[in-house]
Structures are given as structure tokens and as C-alpha cells.
Amino acid sequence: EFDRNRTAQLMLRSQAAGHVAFRVRTSAPRCIVVLPCAGTLPPGDHVSLQVCSSERYIGAGDLKFLVQAVAAPSADPMPKERWAELAASDVQEWNLVGRL
Image 1 (spheres, helix red, strand yellow):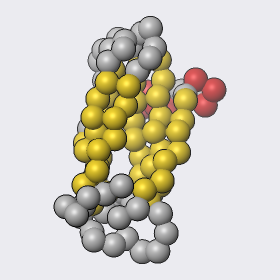
Image 2 (tube, one colour):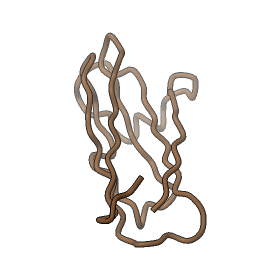
Image 3 (cartoon, one colour):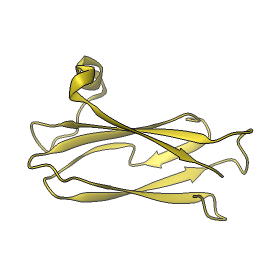
């Protein structure tokens, strides 16, 4: 849930034995910024994401977020091109809903 400053936090925690690459997508990319929107977590680590809105109200309905994660070979960031090459069966996905 967003606070009065139109910000929220999302915590991602890895329970994997190896590195995990993640990325977050939103249904309103022009109005919502997620920082960092992608990265790689070491085994057992976590990251706090900052979710900010540049708008007070974004139409009727909910904001949708898609969090994707996949096993990564190293701590290096996964390039956008590599995400496009991944088989859907290798990527775990979570759909989240938020409101301003």
C-alpha cells in the first residue's frame, strides 16, 4: 500500500542455494517507478525495492506488478536480452496488486 508520499516498499528474499536474478514490471510504467527494477540476489540475501508513483491517482482499478525470478549463473546482472531468451518454464512469476 502506498503512503501519503505515494511510495511503498517491496521486500524480495531469496531462499535459493544459488544466485537469483529478478525483475519487476508494472501495468503503469509511465506513472510507477520501481528501484531497483532488476538485479541479482546472492544465496539467502534480500533486497528492499522502492515503489514510487508520480501520479496521485491512476485511473480506476488496481496497479498490477509482475515479479519474475530465475536461477542465475553468477552475481552479474542479467541482461534484458537474456530474459527474452529464457524458457517460460525456467521463470518463476508472482502477480501482485496495489492501490494508490
